[in-house]
Image (cartoon, rainbow, N blue to C red; front, side, top):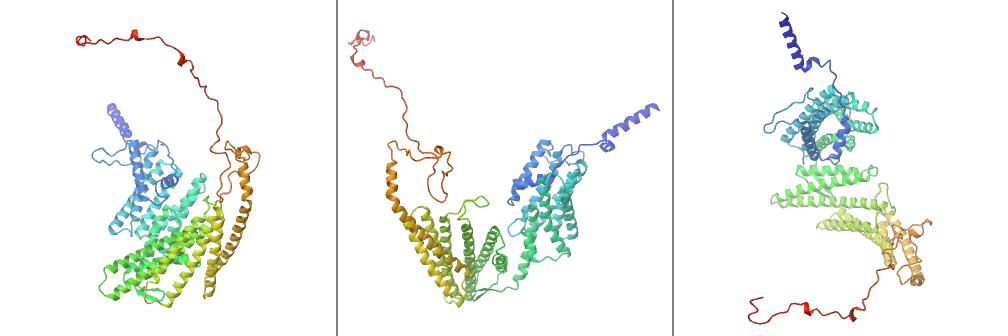
Length: 605
């Protein structure tokens, strides 16, 4: 009996040792800490997501996982793949949690990469995309479960928020269970709102940013559930926000807007342009034109002035893309059109109309660039520490405007039957061309003035004034003239007059002072080539005076003379051996080997 009880006790002890769950309550393992949001944000910003490059970020996650597997010696076999699951007992250090987290990130970035396919993912790609998001949800849930056991309280909370965010993304992409998606997004927002109250300043800022990024998705879910009535303009305003967490929302918003444009395009049958009506038969052409017209409301409407300059330039780029897509569709239809002349004439007219509108928007964009350059013309450095604009850059911009105006005039004037609207448009373009010529001539004079060429600058200012006055008279003679252009021309006339007077006076002063300056320069000339009267920065350190000069004037710096002047330095003495030519050396002929001559002596040599 005693021996049996002893064997039973040993068996029970061995079972307790073999079973790790038998004494987990008695053991207290180490608690790992991970700043999940800070870690992911840093990796995303450094490896592609600053510019929306999900391919680069996915490759980084793959390389990171490979390094973690090798460092942990947790590889999955050498020849044949042997899956090794990560469980609670496997997590013996924090890097195992990193493996689970980066696996979820790799799956999520792969899904977002498929979302960025041109023209949107097709049915097959969408199935693969949703599969990748399911994989991301699976690994994010495992990360939350392991962090709840092996991580501290903050890590566990961040992991729960991360898992809720991934679940919300999956349901958001599937277009179903909006209540559950809303619950997950709200859960993640609540966690980040609480975490924003604690920790260091950087982590608090990141949590607040994530809360702001989650807000559009929550509002969209409320809109789909029916608890909120969002207008299309409000959705577009929400879509202007930036952040990796908003990319899925933006893609969904773009799909919704494309669907709305497709429905609206069904009622759009004609394109009106300067009194002409051109039928539109291709659905893709209608959608592209409607997209461009919707974007034009942002830069031509009442809220255009409140829009930042960078956003307006980005809107112009989107408009150009939409109109180019429309023209490519029109030209494809023109190639495949039937032999009917009416169909070809309609398509050619539509192509001409879309090209003319594209030319108008190009002129407006270049005018916006001119206004930006003018605002930086009088500044040395602006708020973003950028360099000041030179007059030559404005001359180049006005050259582009003149070229754009000439191209648009050629395009509009190419038709045989012109409407009164076309004639008025051509007259307006000619007046704009004259105003652009005056502006170009003025800034060309500014560049010559900075170069010190007074005669050329004076002549250019006088020419610019005559062109501006001519353009002003023609603008005032037209009914409903553009008041902004008229005001700019009046200001240009005044500036041309003032600058021509300044150049005239400056030129006369330089001519009068020329002999005096010449005598000063001659008096300062020295044999050594150094101007002793000219003081440089190192010679007048006690005087507060600029040695660099004005950045707008082309003058040399006064720091130190360069190249430095020649200086006399001592050198090694020259030794002349005068006695060498008068020495008689002894003869050495007796020591030289004598040559024997004869036939026999040659064999004994």
